[in-house]
Length: 578
Image (tube, one colour):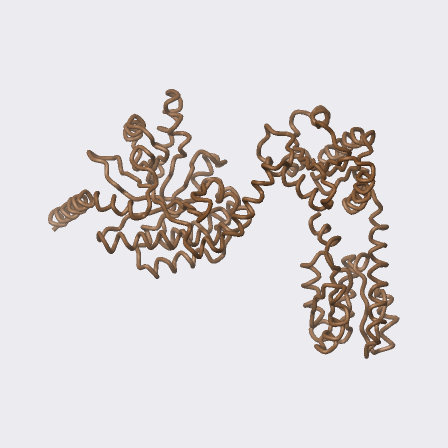
């Protein structure tokens, strides 16, 4: 839909395909005032552009070209039905080509050498307008499945409706109605059942809004739109949909009040945006786009805009939460987890709960994570230089990072650049990340382990893995989700669950970490179960790097004693073997 909206509000695109640079420049200069111009130097390059670009209004095609000629392009476009919606004007000086091209679907010709600019403009304008009108007529008006307006007609009618409403001094609402997890409805029940659900929604919308003179559209799959005279409430609509669809099909409704100075595109975006904001909150069925949500949207956009500067100016800072070994007579510092914080110059401290989900949505999490990896490697190097200690620090690997083809080489380059022990840079991967693409992720993690990295399975128990799947996941450290630890105080059953997880980890011969530990009772219980390491506010909150280094200095004697005892044991063992 967004691509269609762009097509309406932006310049039409024309693709000029000619291997002669002079011809391309002549046509481009003639047409660039009215149209957005794309260029290709041969047929293959043209097809690549056509396949990637949704809304090309016209193709101006030379016939004689290297690599792939114009006839091959026409043949391809005809086979895939492109000529029905995208006209082609052939550029040729060869009279005998004209009939063949017409039979292959060309709409018109412009002869070389080119006519006067006004003639070229007239021919192009005629063909573009002809096909634009044809496109609207061919789409005729209703969606075949639901009988509601298609999105293109909905937008045009809504524009006219808004003008009429303005003349009558009436206010409008724009609604976005989405069925939750519709792809799962189709997978579990079949397409016929899914089609019935869509028809049921359409029937409810039609019966509800026709008396209000509303306009309804089925845009795509689970997406419906409505433009109607403003109502005080849509609770009755939600109730009717719920009764019609039943308990197992849920939905969400986003409502944007139409201001008379806004266009349809903006209002649909607002309605869809507020509906999607509650995509995973099944307790909220109807949401209204209001000033608070707009303020949040503007704030989020501001954070996105500030990101390049913030990264460059090192506004993102690393905090490290200590991990403590609780086995043995004395607890001692045994590592840490690197956590990111943002100290904004005007907004102050920004919670990771705000910016991390935001950056995960738009891909900015990748450069941010690369920054975290390098800053963590620097800390590991500082500890080595200042205390001659190798302390492991873990970093979170975002689900999106796992699809970065350069991630492995980048991490290896950091190990080489800072000359750190590869086993001290632990990679934390959430349990749910494994389920996003099991085969791909497991293959990548196996490579990481082969390189020498140690893998921590983070948030164990909060994701979706079945127990029989755990044996297939490659990891070295199992990290128990803090929710299990906090629930231990609620009764023996919860304690037994944690104990069972620890025992399972021991059977798999992996290190066990519990996070979110806040009191001594939890520490002692976890110790008795055999948990190796803990992190949480009982020992320490996340610390700025310098404070963490102070803690390492404070613990230095314990590390020295531990290393001395280890060396002594190794020495005695060697003597015994001799």
